[in-house]
Amino acid sequence: MTVTQEEFQSMVEDMTTDLVRLVVEREGLTLPQAFEKVYNSPIYEALQNPESQLYFQSPGYVYSCLA
Image (cartoon, rainbow, N blue to C red; front, top):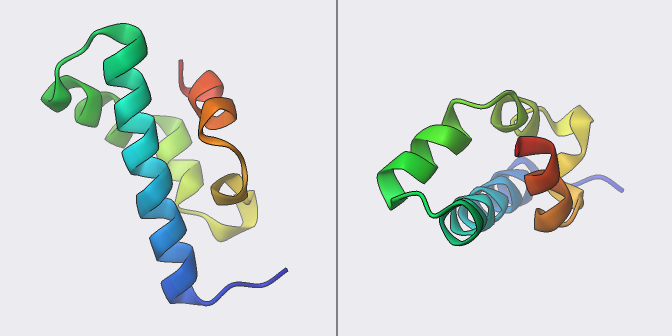
């Protein structure tokens, strides 16, 4: 399945939001700490690559790769 660049970007943003929320809830980090953890992770870098197809996975699965 192919998605447009706009759809891809929206899915990445949604996944990022979910990942930050999960980090705050499960790890007890502050919001700035959670953003830092997500944005500085190899998983976030991979999420930016459409070929990884991480944006199609569940947030829980992607979080498990992050943690």
